[in-house]
Amino acid sequence: MKVLLVSPEVSPLSKTGGLGDVAGALPQALRQVGVDARVLCPLYGFIDPESLGKTRQAGSIRLSIGGAARRANVVETKLPATDVPLYLLQHKRSFDRKGIYSDANGDFTDNDERFLLLAQSALALPSAINWTPDVLHLHDWTVALTPACLNALPSGDARRQWASVLTIHNLMHQGVFPKTVLDKSELPHEFYNANGLEHNGCLNMLKGGIHHATKITTVSPTYSREIQEEPFAHGLQKSLKHRAADLIGIINGIDCAQWDPNTDRSLIRNYSIPDVEDGKTACKKDLLETLGLPQEEKRPLFFVVSRLDQQKGLDLLANVLPKLISDHDAAFALLGSGDPLLESTYKSISRENPDRVAAVIGFDEKLARKLFAGGDFLVVPSRFEPCGLTQLYAMRYGTIPVVRETGGLADTVTPWRPGKRSATGIVYEGMGEWELFLALEQALKVYRSQKTFSALRRNGMQRDSSWEPSAKYYAKTYSWAVEQRLKTIRKEEDLKP
Ligand code: ADP
Ligand code: GLC
Image 1 (cartoon, rainbow, N blue to C red):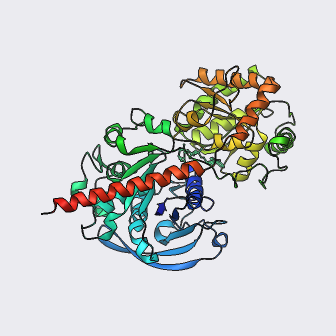
Image 2: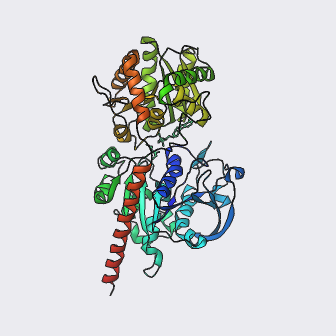
Image 3: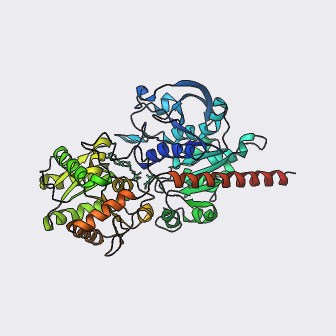
């Protein structure tokens, strides 16, 4: 099975969130289960050529936006420290920038054209590298028009046989543009309808993908059910229900070699289950010093590592944090960036409570790792969470997640309740601040019982969050998609006059 994964970000070269992690780790796991998985991603201006190792110019491909020809180069290399072939799409005018989707002035105004190029290049790349995929695996809205591009190919074109799998990582981001973008995409006008690319009078790239892809996956089973109802469907309920038979939820894994407290070079001390207590104490000391918080190692430390976005429910947490630290002997640290209002809210809570609260605004993977290792409780109060990776990293590092019961959080954290021996975290229901506050108090209760705390910690570290089972599930999904695509093509041939 040959599969080209197409993504706007791929870790460790480019990442704004979990999508980058998935695009970096999944192809490695796929290759281990026998899939010839390769990755296509843009060559952004911030990617350090030194980090790429050996590269080769694989040739150039012709693309076209609204009838105007564009030429892009393909740089062939390997995903760092792996054997995964990586093709970097080099189009300086579109991608030689400091951001993936945006910069300090907001979203790039030419994101429609930039990502149409990426979506189209999935069809053009294989002949340039002399390799024919069975499946194009597209990730999120930026490349969600690729399945429609496949369906628009003339019937004699051999590429029509390629199946497409669209993975929805986050339904909130759909790629909505004015109708005029249809002409730029050069897709047939008949694709612009309510069972296709049109939504509320605009062109909606993700909706186009949902209607045109052979199979659709989401990143957890619970999220695949949630998105068939509003508000989780973000307006696309009808489309998702329409494709329900082809919609599959596959839970994300993590790269257990890259995220291992026993080898992580960001940590002052490495540890594993047998020496977790000593290891985490050393890491907590180091973390408190880094954060400028007092060396009160016995004080429970809650923390967040997150994009600051409405999705993540961090406004709710900001509202209960002052009460948490005034009612209890607890500390808190935030690492995140995004919404300026949330950034300033957390900064001001930290200014008012300098001995208890630290707020670091920015994106800092080393500090994120120190938090997973040195913190006691990761808090994830998301309104919705397609999968979530931070709770998986936390558990692997012996940190107890406190999460809302939604999406992948519900699928990956085993809830604590008295007598439950396999628990790995605190899971709470309800969207409100009060439910969140009670969950944080429950965490403190667990913290006070050394036996329970230590059991949850160890259970989390023992949890298998590796990619292997999910990679096998994707491999099966690819086979189903290929079978289904061939049936569709055969049917079309039969119907030909
Ligand atoms: P999402 O993709 O919605 O942002 P995930 O939990 O799936 O959420 O993935 C987030 C990823 O981004 C994790 O690898 C997390 O550690 C990382 N991350 C988020 N914010 C930061 C930050 N400010 N600094 C470093 N890493 C971050
Ligand atoms: C999205 C989701 C997150 C998920 C990640 C990787 O950004 O918000 O829940 O873990 O994609 O699939």
